[in-house]
Image (tube, rainbow, N blue to C red):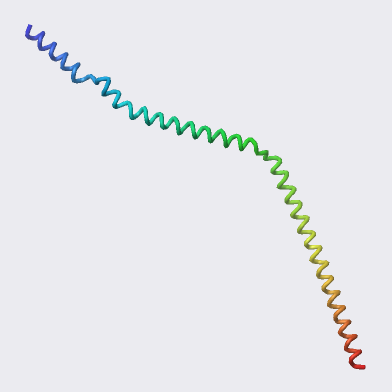
Length: 114
């Protein structure tokens, strides 16, 4: 009988000392639940931003941008060519003006010598 009492006390001791109470488990799990909820909110926010950016990327038509860039390059080349032609004409006009100035100075010199 004595061994039965000792065995029962040992079993009760094991159950009482080794088992966690619901309150203890709740206190331990509560901070993890709070962190998990906060992380879920952050993930939802990030997913919303990703969807927004995906929509913006889809809205960009890459081929039309390439076409517009090619057109701009063509226009720049045309502007360069026009600037070169204008520079050549300006140089020609300058030379004609210098020639006319020299002739006018020579004519003036002749009149002054008379």
